[in-house]
Amino acid sequence: MTEANSAPEHDVIIIGAGVCGIYLVYRMLELGLSVTVLEAGDGPGGTWYWNRYPGARFDSESYTYGYSFSKELLDEWNWSEHFAAQPETLRYLNHVIDRFDLREHMQFGCKVQGAAFDNAANLWTVTLEDGRTFTTRLLFTAIGMLSAATMPRIEGVDAFKGPSFHTYNWPHEGVDLTGKRVGVIGTGATGVQLIAEIADKVGSLTVFQRRPNWCAPLHNAPIDDEEMARIKASYDAIFARCIETPGGFLHGPDRRSYLEVSEAERLEFWETLYASPGFGVWLGNFREVLMDETINREFSDFIAAKIRARVDDPDVAEKLIPKDHGFGSRRVPMETRYYEAYNRSNVTLVDLNETPIECVTEDGIRTSAGEHEFDVIVYATGFDAITGAFDRIDFEGADGSHLKDKWQDGPVTYLGLQTAGFPNLVTLAGPQSGSVSTNFPRGIEEAVDWTTGLVRFMREHGYQRVEADPGAEAEWTEHVKSLYGFGLATTTKSWFTGYNSNVDGHDTLRYMVYFGGAPKYRERLAEVVDNDYEGFEFG
Ligand code: NA7
Image (cartoon, rainbow, N blue to C red):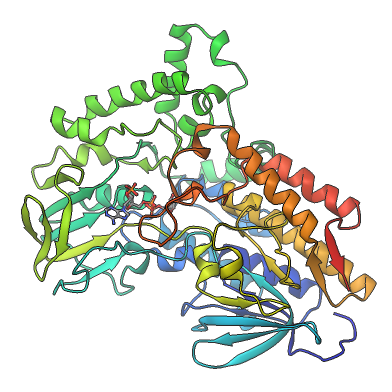
């Protein structure tokens, strides 16, 4: 930055060394700034550092998940599978860090407790849990949208005498589940990956399901050298495609209207989608499937028939078919032989609507029907999504108010990147940003590039301070809210809409996600820049 009144130790502090923090530090170093990354983990990778449960892998095509900013990086990295598993992704992120010499700018084991803005000096003081403090002109959060794991509020969770953990905190030394009696609570995208992976390795597996989700086959496959060479040769086209789709994936809505297609054609198309890899079945469908309840019901019935065909026991199949929401209105877990797991004699499905959990005991889990004894209990119970990681840090703004209080009834932001009263704080992948509803690295690269432009603009003008205008913030938040009128996902209870039964106050709709699609968000960001960062106040 330019001359400071009261010089902070750093121009920029980034909280988090995950997918976002890694690219952000690269860009800040390129600007020649003094920057450090504070990361809670003992290594980089964020989501891919923590989530080490068996079966953890991409649901995005690997080659749409890697960074696109460096041609050399694209040329030298080979993905081994179309949907790579967690260890490979973690290796990739470490490779990026080493290739661009970023590690020396990262500090690990640094759990940020709070950050307070000094209104006179225009700087942030960041405090770690161990008491250390750092000062910085600009504070950038790259703390992830699914990084605040939530345990269920069940009596006796600490009583179990065997190993038990949340999937996010899967022990780094690994857990040998061979022959063990394992209980899993939760059937979201995480539980579905885990259950399918371990079903044939454990002694017995008991799945505690509250609400089933609509799952669809991932159709993963290895990538050989020849195919990888073809992928490398088409990276331009791959990223061009990701840029034009609403979710930043290869899959975008089918251009035809549902209504203009005959029933036979429709069924053939749906069969093709079901047999194709990745999110196509969800995001490459007719637009109306995710917008119109009647059409959605028809497609949900199509998927229900698939589930019935794959699960031997009709009673179990019925329990696995969602009745409270239509296909695609919550995040669709992608699976590999998930439904077939329930055909195994060592796998039991416990429907918590019939027999609710009463408590966790020393030996297992007690439902209203009796006790299940386990050697290991796994909580695949999800996250305090998007705002949870913010709530766990005490951000104190210019007038001494706290971000957690400001966002108590739901986030309020300008572009999802700043919030009024908290100058010099940029919330990358924050609530109401485009990044949280996009194939993550695609959204992140844009948010980082935009932030880099903002920093450059501030340097050029000698500004020490940037702050969202309250009027612009109100307008953006209203705009985000207005988009909740469209699409079935905006009205269904899920982490997209801010529901989490394990967090106080998260039992009503919260406007967390920008549902306008990546192209519209990109347009808006560019417009703001073209208009000299309208909606921001500088000083
Ligand atoms: P999710 O999708 O939030 O799933 C959490 C699961 O845990 C879900 O099935 C919940 O049931 C269940 N859950 C949560 N609390 C309880 C209690 N108290 N009792 C019983 N069951 C419970 O999290 P995931 O980790 O699977 O996925 C998060 C994202 O990570 C995913 O979308 C990907 O983008 C990556 P519920 O449906 O609430 O009834």
